[in-house]
Image (tube, rainbow, N blue to C red; front, side):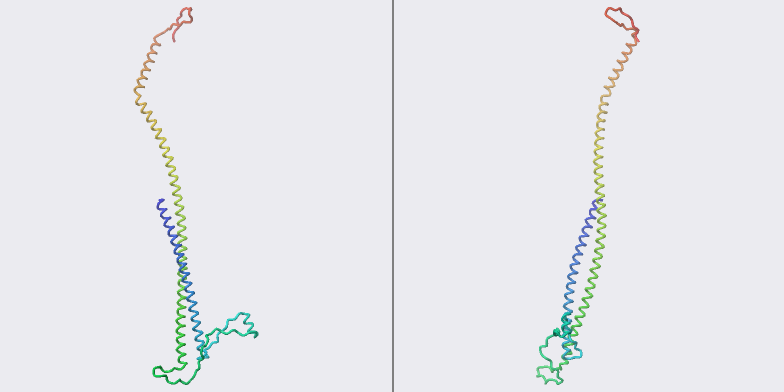
Length: 267
């Protein structure tokens, strides 16, 4: 029925709007998550780089064999100028050393009773390096976890978008079919309404005709005896006239004022 089709259309329209709303919300959320991921990744990579620079700087004094000289980022023009000795290479970015470290194999004198015993600088260096390595491991773990979470979130978002697009396409197709059916039903109703009006007009005309016939019939029935009597009277008069005419053989015919009378045989 038309009401059922109208309800289906309203439900489909509401569903399409809800799908569009969910898609917009999911897109906004994905953009925020990706921005947070990039910000977190940038911070973690920078922190890891700082730790690597710190470890390398410590290695320069405590384990020179493990020290790696920092590279300098130069433009093409600067590199050419440095190669030809026109200018000096810019200093590498590295932590500034505030005070020099003097390595000594001899242990310092015993501390006061309230202090712990002194340790060699190599022993302290080992603890710092271990701490730096632990921090680097934590950062690397967090970076890897962030990458996996970002990949999973992006895959889930793309799957949701594909499902939503498929559902919306299906709903739009069904909506078009429903609207076509509704248009056909409305046109049919209009035709039936026009036919109903025409049928009512014809029925009214026929009813008027039947009413007139009924009035005439009523009049004929009510005047039948009167007309029957009048007809009988007329028939009797005709019979009498025929009898009178049949009984007279001759009639007197006068041809002039002074002509003699003559007899004429009646027909």
